[in-house]
Length: 147
Image (cartoon, rainbow, N blue to C red):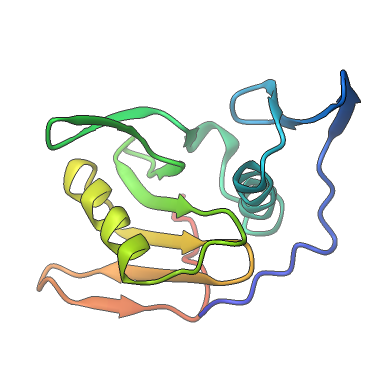
């Protein structure tokens, strides 16, 4: 498991009409702040400000075809060749990270192969490196973005 410290990060929040929205720097718009969106925005801030992942190489909530179903991935970070490099699946903090959540991420990986997979509910974060030998290597820190 990877320990991510979100305590020094600040989200840009706005309160109106009895709801809270958060500004997403990737989508460049205000999004309703659900528990899962809260995790997504803190992780985005962490990747951009702490890990120095380039904002222009990150995509959020885009449609992909998984089998015959249309789904949306949470976050994909692309490498400098614009190929998926890190695929992240995020959950509401109340959702336990287990085999079922990992299976969902693996289904997305089949549709969108990437070098790294990240799974987080904000409290628990796991990251793996996919190897060519179909082995999974669990990491103790996030991968460094290769410019």
